[in-house]
Amino acid sequence: MASVPAVLNSEWTKIRTVSSTTWTLICAFLVTVAMGAALSALLNSQFDDLSSAERATFDPTYVSFSGMVLGQLAMVVFGVLVVGTEYSSGMIRTSLSAVPQRGSFLFSKIAVAGVLALLVGLATSFVTFFLGQALLGDRGTDIGAENVLRAVVGGGIYMGLIAVFSMGVATMLRSSMLSLGILMPFFFLVSQILTAVPGAKSVARYFPDQAGSKIMQVVPDAMNSDPAPYGPWAGLGIMALWVIAALVGGYLVLKKRDA
Amino acid sequence: MIELDGLTKRFGNKVAVDHLSCRVRPGMVTGFLGPNGAGKSTTMRMMLDLDNPTSGSVRIDGRHYRDLQEPLKHIGALLDAKSMHGGRSAYNNLLCLAQSNRIPTSRVSQVLDTVGLTAVAKKKSKGFSLGMGQRLGIAAALLGDPEILMFDEPVNGLDPEGIHWIRNLMKTLASEGRTIFVSSHLMSEMALTADHLIVIGQGKLLADTSMADFIHENSRSYVRMRSPEQERLRDLLHAEGIVAVESGNGTLEIDGEAPERLGELAGRHGIVLHELSAQRASLEEAFMQMTAGSVEYHAHSDRDGAEPPPVGPHWGEQWNQQQSGGAAGDRAKEV
Image (cartoon, rainbow over all chains, first blue to last red; front, side, top):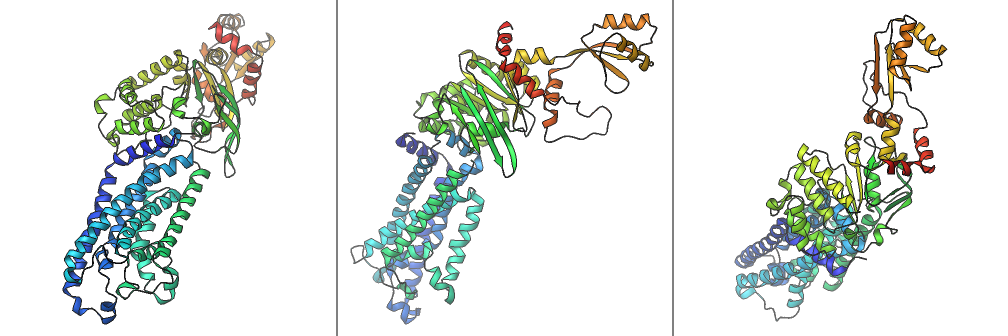
């Protein structure tokens, strides 16, 4: 069997020597922080215009994470490209010739990229939280308040899981374009729209992003959002199940199909 | 040493590789020859465990590819020029391969030097020409200093200087005792580099023979005769016990007779000849004849004489019999 530390080392070299890694991760950070800051400032200035229900469930932590909706798309791109460029460049044949054990190859790659996405996610989460609270002024909260640290760390985990989920999907579909064509509209439109449709709501709340994002709420049903039949950690658990399913699917495709 | 045992690959109901059994031996260049679509690349991908065989197996030094620890140290392969990430520099593309198999980093600069890419080592490989991409792929194959090297159509798209370089490289590597397996659809190319030939057509083994044997058996010499009195000529030859084959356009082809004798014979009987010439079939023709029945994509032409030559139905079997008779090895030594 190939030596796992050697394969991890090789995958780390692969990730750090392509420019797409840098720009997608910087994008994820900047978009999340900038949009979170903008919405924090906006809601702070227009707090009095909010409905009474929204004011009652005002969640300063969740508000500062508003940028995740867009920022996660950059994480999707990162995850898809890490796997997809192996296929689009033809590198996959060279890679599998060097590491023929499919499991070692795939899970080393996903471990390295997943840890990197998690670290960037955590940095993003903390920066967007503190910047958001500063802009919310008196309506902001403190990292020491109840459940706030859980939400901030959870935001970082959420971004990491989104990236890993995308890697699993890209391994199944074996194409960057196809994966992006499915995942981008799904996270940006389909998932958001279905949660607003009465009939589809009960299904859509089990989608990975909808379930996972509960971890970022400190106030239950924050900002008058739909009450969910699961708590923040259970929500993250549902998302983790999606991620595991995507990885198992990806592994099976890689193992069974010709490269 | 690579051993193929009953290797078979089906795509749906199309058989790409059909019960292929052969050995690729060390210390020589083995040419893997077949027309386009014969299953060469599929076979090579199965050797590297990239494609799963429908049945049969491949052994590399007695082991399955997936069981090799750090395979780049056993076998290096060039499959196609575009098998690297274009956004990564040549150096980094090789570095990540080296690291995965615990090959010392210093080796990366060494192989870049061997293939002459040192000057562009830091350049992104997407800007590389086909020839440079081919060289980078060869550098990757050489990285682990492997005993077995495989090249799929390495001269495709190369300029004459590049072709010359690859030929010499393969010969040098073979002279170091390595196993060199190189595919091509050009007989003329193989005649210059290969010591041994494995010919396939539609996935089936057609020949497994030494190059010397192939040349000996296939550079058939014959005499071509053309006469306005073809019937008389033919009767005359028949009476003398000489077998003449009509080859269209009113010409006769005679095997195993000297042109002098045939000319004198015709002269004695007063038969006018328009042509009397000694002919030698090229290796390319021999190869085309061998694979004519198994070419998948024929070009069609309305011109006379452009059809593929008639095929003896048992070419492959003939070769196999010779092979099993042990004659091939002996003849190879003579040459």
